[in-house]
Structure formats: C-alpha cells, structure tokens
Amino acid sequence: MALPNIFKPNINKTINNNKEVYYSFLNNTKKNSDLSYNESPLDTLDRLETSGSYIFNKKVTIITKNKTYNTKIAGKLKNYLITLDNDKILLSDIISIKEQ
Image 1 (cartoon, helix red, strand yellow):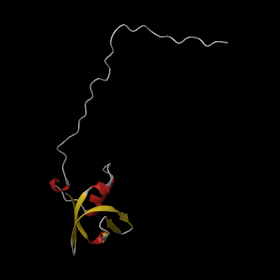
Image 2: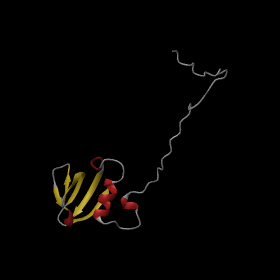
Image 3: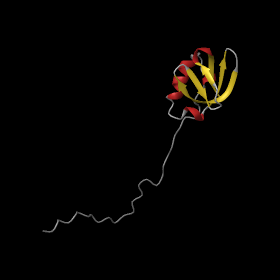
Image 4: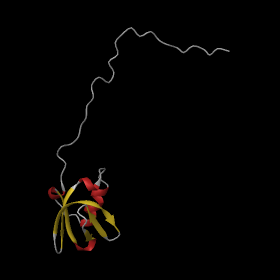
C-alpha cells in the first residue's frame, strides 16, 4: 500500500520572508540612583533578583552601618547577603544598595 502524494504548489516567484530583523530596547532605563523614591534594601534585592539577569553579574555599592562595599552579590542566604568577595553581610545592617 502506497502513501498518497503531498500537495506541492508551483512557486514561480522569489520569496523574501524574514530578510530584515529589528530589535528594540529602551536605552533610557533608570538605575536605582535615578528613581524619585527611596527603595528599601530588601525591595532593591528583590528587584535585582527578578530583573531577568543573574544578580552576580551586577556591580553594586552596599552601604551598611559600619562599612561600604563595592562588590557583586553572590546570593542571599537566610538573614545574610553573600558577596563574591566572600563577605557575609547581615541584612538588618544594610542601609542602602545601589547599582553601579
């Protein structure tokens, strides 16, 4: 038993589908320092985690009660923020977090 043939139309013209591709992205995105309101450090962490890119690829300035860190965030573990410089920062000590 043979299978039926598949319909193949005769195409007598050049097809130019998808020859041009456009990409659009807003270049005027605002960083945390440009915002008109003050985010709490935990809101900033949540925004960085849900931004769609890896959190450890972002340079940040973390200001605490005792010290200022210019580093990248490795992650959040319980009540601590871990940096790529092996610093362990208590979340309650953080005053602000700003993207660089």
